[in-house]
Image 1 (cartoon, rainbow, N blue to C red):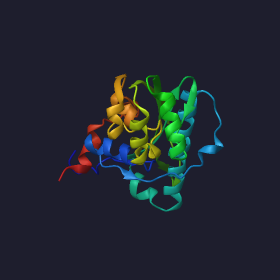
Image 2: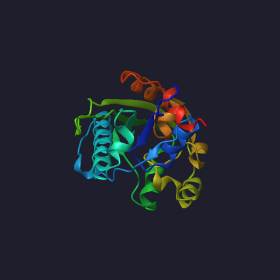
Image 3: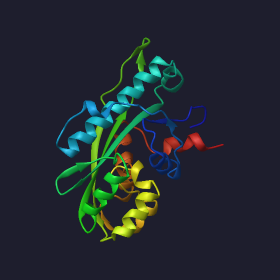
Length: 224
């Protein structure tokens, strides 16, 4: 790989959890939040919802990079970068949940979730853009969804109140952070562990391969 510039991954998300997942896996992403208005998308199928939202976020960041004249730095003349958009929701009892709006909603949510089995859906959209004669010509995105079953513990009202008071569940789709204090209240998982934290690393590996890239190519960005 001598003489070649390293591959870069642009993370179209402000999620610290997603960033840490990638960093722990050897990828230092360029974080560029999309600020996409999720209220524009109204869908009742959770798998479709997260995939559409992930696609919109990745596409929006691609447009932002182009407008900010940062695109050429990342993708020209050789398209040695990708843009990853993600979105997650939790489904419990057939109802779709995102981040709780406030503490009271988080408490109510946990009172419904405890002792139940939920499904955490995460949509992944991978764009591999490039230019031809100075014109932006992105290849078709790879869009996938991963689902993990989450078995919640039968926590008490006092435990719920203490957890919500930490503020942690207010920043999480599904109202809990598996890698944080919320891990105490999850009894087991059925499926991909990292998917519950924010993105599925095994699925991401498959997706970049579909574009002729290996995840190990991104490790070069951290090699001195």
